Image (cartoon, rainbow over all chains, first blue to last red; front, side, top):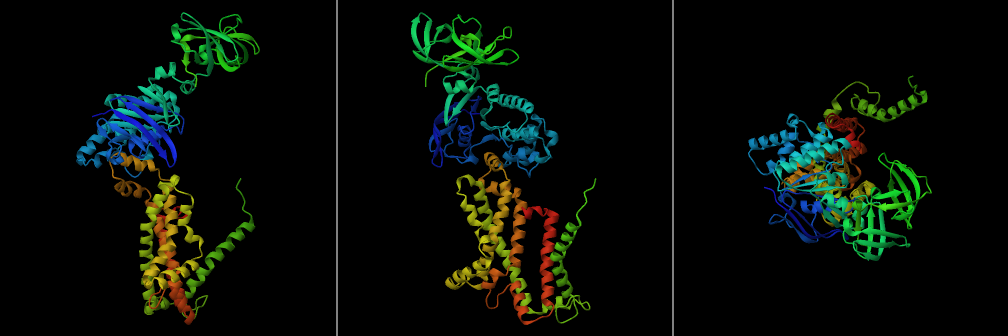
Length: 353
Length: 262
């Protein structure tokens, strides 16, 4: 049976240092939620709190109706997969997988049968008698996965499970993890610092910074509509241009940058625009036009780099250093006066900090 | 092209070996000499001096005492040292750095000072009996080695492994015995052997803590040399060496000497 996870207003400290503040998170039954952020953002702390390796200073953690907060780690029934695989070096692959079943005092024959069936699912039944040291990294992580899944936990947690694998294997393994999680319908919490990994396999992603969740949304929403500057920068919006509205005319809004350059935008596709806001775009969402009279931001182009699908320019516009892409048909030389035209489909409107 | 070795280097190496092994050869030779004094090269061949060890009751008694003290002292040191080393490594980031230094302090303090201060405090002030003071002294003497060696084994132990076991439903205490301990087994064995040998060969601490009727073998050797000059001392020394060598061979065969070296 699988259960939803509810983290309710958790605060946690390491000694005197506060590492999590009022963090709340709900993972629905069968959902895979990733915690994504740089090291020190609190993602691993959150996982360790749920696992019971750390105690929160306040707040509660519930799995279904069961309050886990004061339960010791060995009574929580959570499947865990570690970055270092954490296989028992002195036990065979079979005994590694059967370990959790042995703790549950299942009959030996059933332990063996279930462990073997799980090993078959991860394609390693032929290695049952090996020791962990004789396996490759990918095989070790499969054993770790089988060991966590065989106890049929209501919640699965992953702590950077793919960081020790090479790039190609990482992609294969994350697909495998997602397939197994889907097939079992297990609720899952996945900690990673790898954005692509988080976005590719998660139902929702929580982007964290300094012990708080900055935004919790589907990967699509995070990627296209970040809610704040931190998330925008995190998902690759290079250009954050602060603007102030000077006039409104139906859906059209006129705004100026901090040094007075004017820009006209339409709310039709950008959504409602407040009086003071930040226009966020990726380099892809800021098109370079050679026509200095076109409607957009006047800019002086700087260094040009070749991306394969476009040219990219470092430019100076409205006192902001910006990055914009231009078509391969017309390369511009550094120093060219040009116009940067925001593409409303690739822009986000953020509230100023 | 094969690298040629400088003749001076060969000479130096040979000298070092002579310096290291020479005294052992002399003692061994003297122990089988058919003379009533220490003689090298041996004149005649006899095992009489080895038999003589068993005929002198003081040697018999002190060999037993030495073995008892070394075994029990090492065992107590392991009982204290294993949990201490575990705690020091498990919670390293939360503990001040000087704490682990504290546990190896007895290595830095001259053994003779430890012996003297134990005599003053344990034996004289607290009135602890001689055998018990000896045990306390030897436990203290070998504890730093135990903690050092087991810490070295634990330093390369991934504590995620322990957490994995706990998350799978194994009680932390049970996890320590079924998961942590088997993985630092070689460290525990190495610690045992190192501690045992240190204790068996100790003079400085024992010198202060032995008392009437209770003594250890090295102290008895000292006492014997003060009165007699026969080769019995040489044969006892050979026995002690053999014991150390046999233990080292066992370590080498089962674990490899690098376990003790690191």
